[in-house]
Each structure stands twice: as structure tokens, then as C-alpha cells.
Image 1 (tube, rainbow, N blue to C red):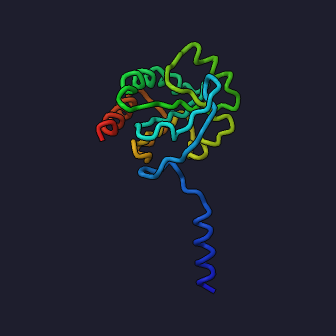
Image 2 (cartoon, rainbow, N blue to C red; image 1 turned 60 degrees about the vertical axis):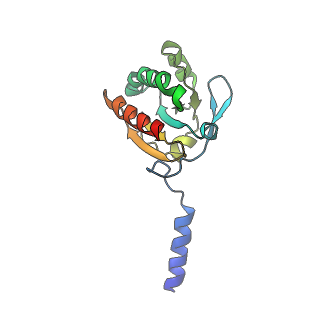
Image 3 (cartoon, helix red, strand yellow; image 1 turned 30 degrees about the vertical axis):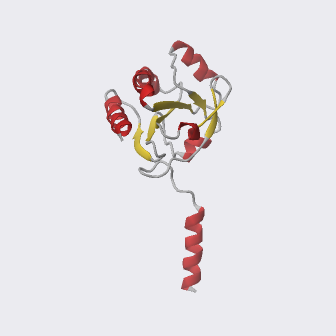
Length: 162
């Protein structure tokens, strides 16, 4: 009887998806619609350092952080780095309106059904995940206060050199 219980417990554990946002775990693959109408997938950035920033237009810290993210993207994108801004709002119109006021050049993706946010276990905005060139999650940051961008930069510089 105890072997059967152990087998059932093992089967249940195997059927539960592991949380993607765990350091050194493979980053879950996804594809989302992007600003401009095309789809963008994480797989197309294989071999690059990828920062995924989950944000919303109503989020004050997200608004504060966005220009800093743009400057990081512009500085490092020619060195094998990209930034994917994942907007989590059910209706992307508010994001599009805000982005007209605060334009960015990195890809903006729309997670209107929160599928990728759930996949990455995003508890709130903003949340940032940095993935290394091999596709592993290496850095997770929740929230934003001024100065956090220095942690992003340290991680990005380290991973670009790897």
C-alpha cells in the first residue's frame, strides 16, 4: 500500500509544472503578439542575454523604470542583449497610449490573458527576469525603486561577458 501511495505522490509531483522563475532553471518558451502586429517568441533570441520586464501602464514604478530600461537597451543591444517589455493588461490600448508619451525602441509584447505572467510566476508589477545565453533564468527582481537598475546592469554585464 505504501508503494502505491508513493507512486501516486510521485506522479502528482511530476504533473505539477515547476515554477519557471527559479534561478538556473530553463526559461519557459513563449510567443506573444507584439506592438506592430507581429508575434515575438523567446526562442528567436536564443544565444542572447534577454531581460523580460513585466509591466503595466497603471503601475507607477513601471513608469519610472521604463526610460531607464530604454537606456540600458540602447547601450547593450549591440552586444548580444535584448529586452522584452511584456505588458500584462487585459486591454493593450492603455499601454499603447502611454508608450506614445514615453516611446521605447525595444519590443513590447502583450500578455492580455496573463499566460506568460503565470508561466513566470509574476506576483506584481514590475517584475524582471534576466536569462543567460544558454536559456537559463539567472536573475529575478520584483518591484522597482531607484537604484535597482544598477543590479540589472551588473547582471547584464556579467552575462554578456560569459
